[in-house]
Image 1 (tube, rainbow over the protein chains, first blue to last red):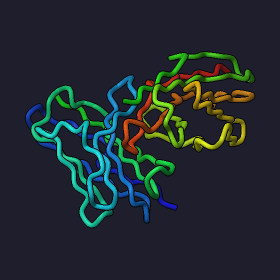
Image 2 (cartoon, chains in turn red, green):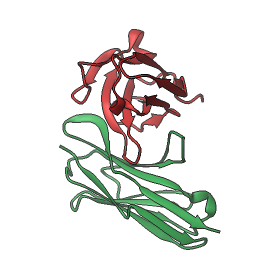
Image 3 (tube, each protein chain N blue to C red):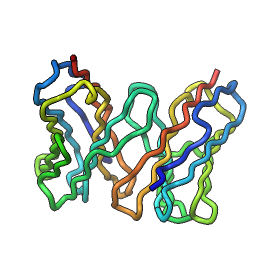
Length: 113
Length: 112
């Protein structure tokens, strides 16, 4: 069974530029999450989708971050404009349904300079 | 709001020892708890998922326990090996949403 796929693996951008990350969840998984992991910290939930609807985006900085999950499969997370403090690993996870085991991708390491 | 704390933050032990990693959480109204492993520069690998109705879950040399009433979970690693060196993260749902709240992790080093 293929795991959660994320791209790119690494990205370096200058502050005030925009960037987008892509995630393809495990086939058949209805729930998709985006997490932000700052160095030395545990991951923090940014947004959760159930199929193509948003379940929780309470911790998403909506002035600069946006996410979508078209057709309830792939998802993209965008940052515009990026700030230095956005430097982190962005992790995508999926689960079969709500309240089931979550599986994570390899993450995208973003460096904002 | 769920808060998760992991103790110790770091641990270094010689190969072969049995060890215990601790996790505490503030909101005991959880339906499950998950333990993950993270290798440097990698994503998270799910190790064990304990349902709220269970007290223990085992996978190979790993055993996780859950005590909802006290807000605690432990991860027991038997006969540790150098390949077990990684950061171990505990995560629990809470705050009314399904998303996981993570601790900061325990950085484990097993000395050959």
